[in-house]
Image (cartoon, rainbow, N blue to C red):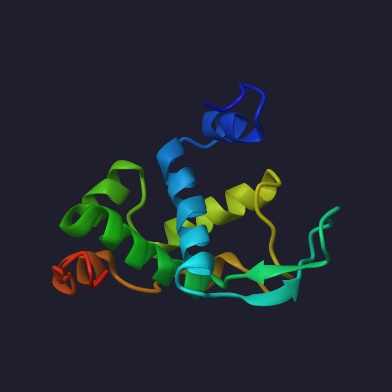
Amino acid sequence: MLDPSHPLIELLKKDKRYKFDAYLFVFEALNYAQSVLGMGNEVSCSEPSDEAPTEQHVTGQELCEAIRRYASKQYGFLAQDVLASWGIHRTGDFGEIVFNLIKIGEMRKTENDQRKDFEDVYEFETAFRKEFKITSAQES
């Protein structure tokens, strides 16, 4: 559980569009994009940091694709319903979540990152229902 003084708690009080689970899921999907799918390039972030000057950066479009794949893997045919229960109905919602996290210092961006990078990357009904394929555990 998060400390009540954590910035995410304050964010959830101010912006009630998305559930706590939506934010956790975006973090998990980012990790999946980088560690499992090998997405991202080394870049310097425009946000100041005490850490190393470069980090593995995933673009908005790449993150949307990773989220699609991760959601399908985790929730199968119910992925669209699970995301909707958290307030997520379109890829632009992922951008809103990411930029909320940037605003509170939980994620960083490059000078080229914009909310519009997340807009209309795919349509949920097509991505999570029409293109859904059942695979065995060995295939996923």
